[in-house]
Length: 311
Ligand code: CP
Ligand code: NVA
Image (cartoon, rainbow, N blue to C red; front, side):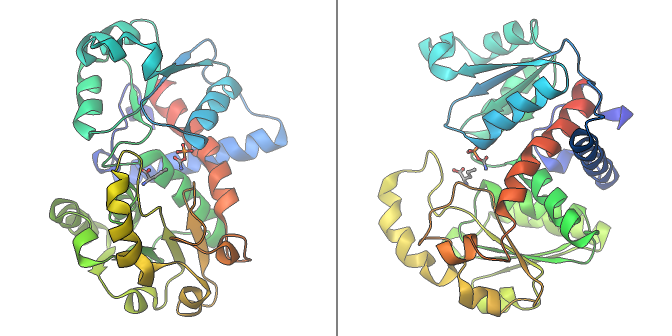
């Protein structure tokens, strides 16, 4: 973890599998220490900026609470309140903000925007979601899976639905941990060729496995974890919605899907969920669901990330 100090976290692909494992262990320790009331304030006096160009419930509140618990403070920066909204360039914003702050979380649209921000920032930049990646969410997901199964290697995760930022980060995160990941989407909504290729190359190194299919039944077979995400993501035109609703219907995470998986399967969802679309209320509230543990784990996973990068 020592070697993470000062780094950005824009995507999990930049991190070695051993580092991700160490990060998960650190997050687990911070969680246990916090619950036992013996947590140390590793980031005393540090300030975390949080620049959001899209709405957020979990990411914003877990980072703000996390930095406070670590002895620092969070500063929420909505795009509308910054001169960025009056066309101040990213490269100026990044240089100025990083001269005050010790770390910055950015949630934005194009991934190239956060890359540019990071290029001009002198302090660690953490991806709080872009159109292409959502790495902090997947670290919380991996933490949740590890708590459930004690190990990650060899487990099979099935993702049903839209090939989006969550799919991309899951593909990379899971194979880095030696897991098997199967993505089932309608052909026109599969993850991109570049991401799949990258994940397959990683899988060759770790013993993981990547399968991309349009057949949900096949994808669910022997699955230990089933997950999904909204069919229409933030920033996507609502016009695509009616086409998508139709195309995605066979990929709903419902009771039938659970029956096709391993008998000890657990269900994850990064939230917010649209009950009746990508997941049913019954499954989200059912006994296989770990979604609220997963949401809580955003806090613990991100505390690990902040300590490693900003400590
Ligand atoms: N899962 C997630 O990132 O949620 P928010 O959009 O509420 O931050
Ligand atoms: N794919 C979703 C994830 C929300 C946390 C979106 O980008 O809106």
